[in-house]
Amino acid sequence: MAYGVAPPEATGGAGTIFEYRVAAFAFSRLLRGAHVPVGIDLPVESVALQQRIAGSLLDDIVMRAGPPHQHTTIEFQVKKQLAVTGSSQALISLLGQAAETWSTREHALKTGRLLLGAAAAGPSDDLADLAELAARAHDHTSLVSFQSLLVEKATNQRLRTRHAHIVKAMSAATGITEPSELGQMTHQVLSRLHVWRVEPFEDGRDRLDGLDDLAELARHTGQSAAILLALLAELAEEVGPHGGDLDAHQVRARFQRKYGIALPERAGQSSPIEGGARFEGDVTFQGPVYLASNQVFNGMTINTHYPPASPRSNHDLP
Figure 1 (tube, rainbow, N blue to C red):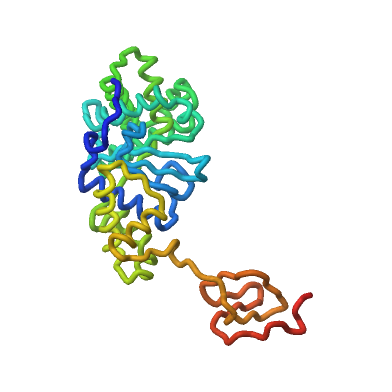
Figure 2 (cartoon, rainbow, N blue to C red):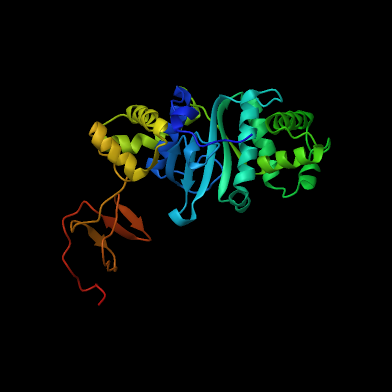
């Protein structure tokens, strides 16, 4: 099954409320300097939406992390519900696009520069099983090694049955029927797949985490964290149909221009001391010193609330 290049509007760019909520969580992590939710142990550096036109098949949300010339990227397909059964159209769609990504971008996947992602709210048991099978596949280079786990003494019946459903869905997605080839493709996809179990609703974990991420930023702007999160969802709805690709600077500039809200570069970011600090101890500091509040280090008190100290004392080092 081949995919042509289509404009974002023609590939689901209008999206759904659920997708925009998930994108808002991605943007909140970007602004906070938080890590990618799954797969990559690095802070988010940019978030892009509806990237089919740029060659991403799992194109709903694309997160990049690491320095610009060495980005690691994870591409997510977002589904409100992702039933992990052999007849699940959502799973068949996910696996088909993941399999095609292997055929077109194999090097990036093998080197770890590209990862595959599935973001969904439920069903919770299905997603937990998919995540568990993927985690096991991450640790096995070969199909033979991976299959050695799928036996009664190593893996429970529920997971073995779930794996059989995934294999069946992969066959439906790719048309592959030869058992060895089908097993190999299923293992390849699972070995690079990461599952983001999203809870976007009022009391859901991700929404609460998103509010926590934005709490300090909100304090600096005079807005509530809930308002900022809603505005990030609105931003996703606005830029998604155009294949928006934003870093934190662009998001902050957008908030300033569109809403008149000046978001700080980082929550709790402090400024250099301008001369009103007092240092107690036999220490000389050169250059700016960044402080958030009074600090004590091994008996040395750094206090930003005292009047300026004298420029030098007899205890200063030359």
